Image 1 (cartoon, rainbow, N blue to C red):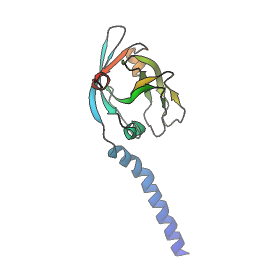
Image 2: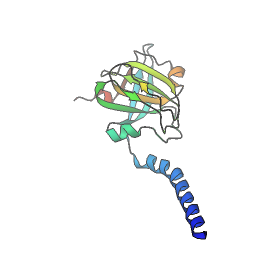
Image 3: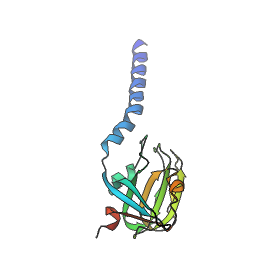
Image 4: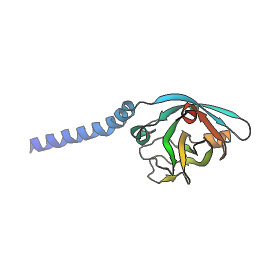
Length: 160
């Protein structure tokens, strides 16, 4: 009986370790390049951000999961290679986010504001897009970013 209790406690402690350690390990194991990103608004403003770049399938699947903080002028750009309808979700994403869905030319076609952390609800691009930019929730409203504005970065302007 004593061995059974010992093994049960050891199993519980091990499980607790993995629940705490795995998110931190997952965040540390995925590396992203960074680049400047500009948003040119229809109102004539140029907004400056530094974004991490998710171009591989693994990077796009990981995205901003497990992040606890992000600078106000930071974000992530997802490059899907070819324009297509995109479905995103927030599972394992701690930060609430604004999502900008942009076409091949970098024109914003759809915006999802304040995506709910940890949600499995599908966030649909609503039309074919090549890029998704994730920013801290509230940035879209605060800076007046609108459908029709344009994103520009090394990723969106590279020749293929």
